[in-house]
Image (cartoon, rainbow, N blue to C red; front, side, top):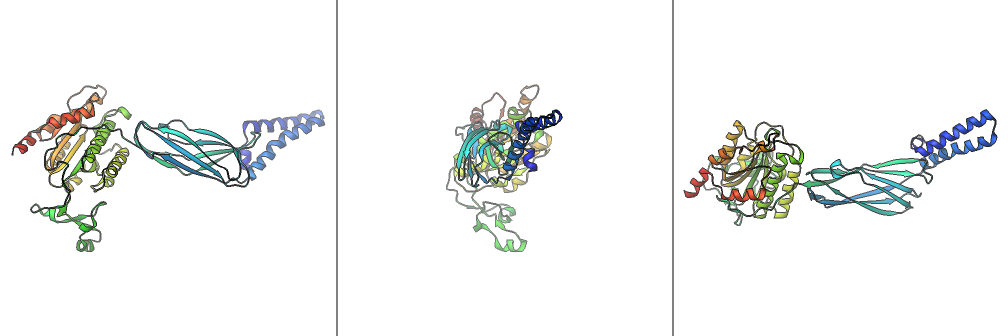
Length: 419
C-alpha cells in the first residue's frame, strides 16, 4: 500500500487534496452534502491505490537486436516482445526503454488492452556514429489504473549488448613483398635452422593446434605448453595499432585515434580477405581475442572488428614488445602509428628487424592539433629504417594512402629486394 500511495499521479494527488479540503470546509460550515463529496474524492484515489497495489502482474520480456554487430553509422532494429502471464488484466502499459545517449533518445510506447495471455511486440531503431559496445536496457514498464490516479513502475533488469564496429574503407590490392604474399597452402613448415628459441616450447594460446601440445613439458611445468618448431606462418600478418593517449590529438570522432582505428580496421579486413591470418596488437600488447587462429575469412573479420570496436586510449608511455617473441621469421607487419618519441624509435627499429615486410601508415597527429599544421610526422625516419611508410593527415583518404604505400620502398627494403 505504501508503494501504491507513492505512485499517485498528479491527478490522484489533486483528488486527495480536493477531497480533504472539501471535508474540512464542510465540517467548518456544517454542510453534510459537501462532506459526502469530499469523502468520495478522498476514497477514490485510496481505493484505486489499494487495488493497484494488490494486483499481481506477471509480465515477461524478450529483447532481440538485429543485427547485434553493426558498422558505425548503420542502423539496427530492436524488438521488444511482452507477454502477460498474470490472471488480471493490466490495462494500459507505458513502456520506456533505457538506451545510451549515443544511440538516440529513449523510446516510449503505450500499449493497451493487456489481457491474460496477451502477447505483443514493439520495435524501435538505433544508430550509433561512434564505435563501441552499448547496453540496451533495462526497460521500465509503468502500470496505471483506468482513471489515471495511480501509476506504478516495474523494471526489467536484463540488458542486451550492441556492438558498433569502426568504419572501414575498401582497399585495393598492393604488392606485399617479402616472404609473405598472401598465397600458399598454409602448410606447417619446420625450421631447419635457427635459434634455440625456435625449437623450444611456449605457453598454450587460444587457437593453437592441440596436436602441437608438448605433454612432457606440460606435465613438468603444470600448464599446457606447445612446440614452437612447426608453425603455419606462411600467411600470417600482424596489424599494430598505437592507441596511447599521448600519441594522438583531438577528441571524439574528429580525433586522430578514431582515424587510426578506422585505418587499422580497413587494413585488417583487407588482409583477411587476401587470405592472411591476422592478429591485432596494440600499445598494450597482443589482444588474446585476436591471436593467430586459422579460421575462415568471415570469422576472422568478425573477431578483428569486435576487438577494434572496444579499443580504448591507453595511458601507457611506452610500447609493449612482448608480442615480438611470437612474430616468427618473415612475417608481415602493418603498423598504424600516432606521434612517436625518442624511446619509440628504438621499438620501431626492433619491430622492423623482426618483420619480413614492414609497412607503416603514420598519422601526422600535429594536423589534428590546435594549430592543424602538417609536419610530416615520423615518416622520414621510418623510411630510413627500411619501413615502407606514408603519412596521413585529416584531409587524406585512407584508400589513396594505401595505394601510395604500395609504391613506397624503404632504403633497407630496396637493398633486400635487390639482394
